[in-house]
Length: 333
Image: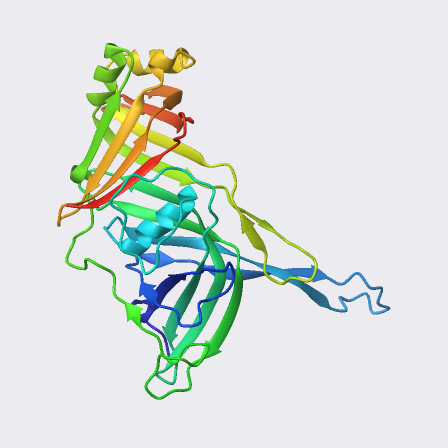
């Protein structure tokens, strides 16, 4: 019997103690396009000598948890908390969404993620990942297309179980829990035409060029570069924050040399503009990303082939401003 992927459920809950699922967890379901969260064993071949010349055994020496979660860019309080955790900001649970500016911090936040799959007995099979961290988030922008968010996750340990209750949803610990639905479900995903980009630059020529750019594709990635620390006597790894990095790439129609000039002279603070990005959904809920200093690393004019547009392919990074690397604001309009 095959299991239809649409029947799967992914839910998360914040952990007060890293690696420990709350005793009475209030999981929140995620609006989802796809996910690939999994546990991969670190299998080591036995080195023992064997007269048969064969492999005598393999040794399971721990396991790594990682993968990605992909969703439409929607105003969802659970995803807002996940984004805040990437920034190293404190998480509030049950989540209500953030309406104020939040800056980069040093708080380590972990979650328990639970995948529920309907099994052959029409009951539930569970895979629960405790101590999971959201390490990165990326937004991909394209004209006339829904925006997507991709989260990178890592760390923690897996537990699996089968539901023996006829009614289902007994969960791993045998206690029925509430799964809150995402809100607001009536809001359609944010789309490319609902994105606002505002550049504030020190030079009028660069500001004009960037604000007047006809951008055909764009990607923004906030990467906390979390890492796992393995220790003797522990199965699961601890997660620590890494150096937060923000990468920005976009493709725009070629209109002049102003952007290239900024790349060639990118040590001049006048060529390190501020970028403000707003994303609005159909219910007028807004995500705002603010990067006070953006440094253009590469601006390459590409001539692809005959009868095509000449475009700039631009690569940039967000630099540290006083007390602020990135400001995230989610406001329900």
